Length: 133
Image 1: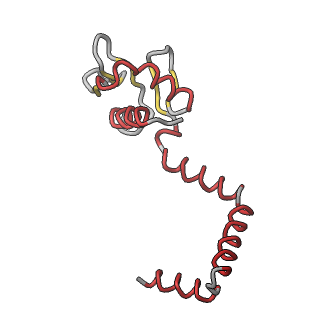
Image 2: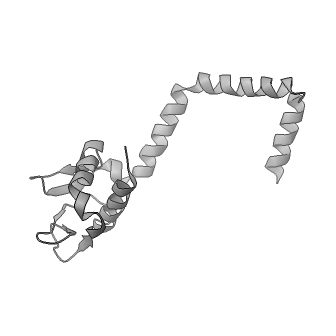
Image 3: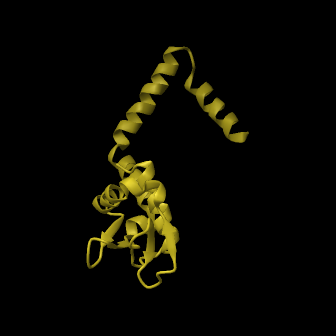
């Protein structure tokens, strides 16, 4: 489950790394993440300081970040860098798996409308009028 807090932390990490797989870590004695190669480049996570470890664990479990050489250093994965592409692919896979169900749904909706006195011609005409607007 991708929560609102996970999404906000992931957005913060994408800003920090410039949406790349640059290594980042917790900055000691602060509520910030920093780039491993540039300690001056930081992002503050103080709004989620009380739950940051569980958020990072969730991001790790979901495959959005990965540990590098210890539990406090991370990198973004392709899943987080190209998040929208992964979501689109998941939707397309779902539609491909459920295409028979979708066709059955459309046929049943058309049958329901027909039972209320709407002709299929009327439905197509209404759709065409909506598309022209």
